[in-house]
Length: 68
Image 1: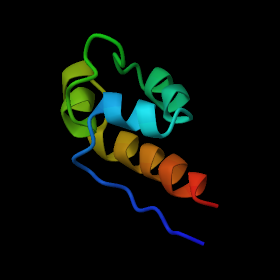
Image 2: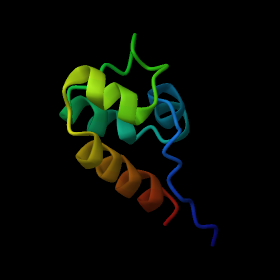
Image 3: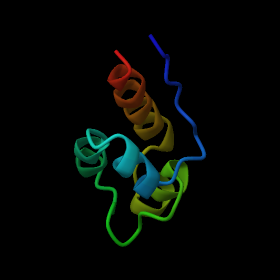
Image 4: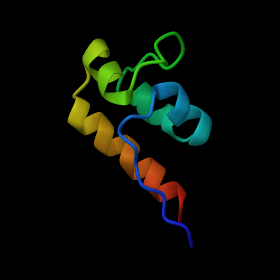
């Protein structure tokens, strides 16, 4: 089984394209995944007023869970 590890330099658009289940996480955190999707996950969190650490951890869990 291949293990997928979270890449913190992923943009919101890349995360959504590669791991569609992340859409729910971005919505939960109020992240603009449409027009603001070119930003990295951390940049988007700061821009949209979300906790960058909490968002990154939630996205990481979804991405790494997709490999199972």
